[in-house]
Each structure stands twice: as structure tokens, then as C-alpha cells.
Image (cartoon, rainbow, N blue to C red; front, side, top):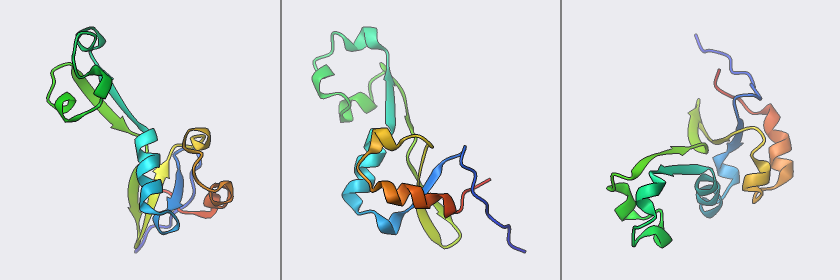
Length: 108
């Protein structure tokens, strides 16, 4: 028995990956990725201007990171899941695509 999928707008907007090119997906994921640091330690770091870089990954002042844009597989299809209301942040995709995303499946 397969579970029927329904759209839950409060959870996220699912954009079909096949409708986006790789640079667009990477740009959206980058804009929706947040990194947290111990700012007091970072003030004196020589790598502050390059933040976030490979050196930051191993630094004790790097606390954590969180991605709000993720690739999700629903059935046989892959989607880029973004938070509802993130269009002003990502702004690099067609607004008609987002408007049509209300008919896409989401995960309950």
C-alpha cells in the first residue's frame, strides 16, 4: 500500500529539480544556508574576510550550520525543498514556477 501525498504549504515549497539548472540549485542552497560562529573568537582571525572557508570547518569557533534548502526525493522524483516565503531571498527562479508548486507533493 502506498501513502498518498498531499501538499502542506506550511512545511515547504517543493520545486522539481529537473526544472532548475545546477548553478541555480547551488545558488539557492547557498542563500538558504546559515553558519554560526563564536564571534568573539572570529574578530581576531586572519581568515575572517574569507569566512566561510575550509579552515572555518575545523575551527572551534565554528559552532554549526543549517541548510534550509534541501533536495528531497518523493517517490521517483527529486525536488528542491525551500521554506514557504523564501522567494524574496532566492528570487532567482521564475515566480510562475513557485506559483505552480502548490500542486506538487510534500512530505507530511
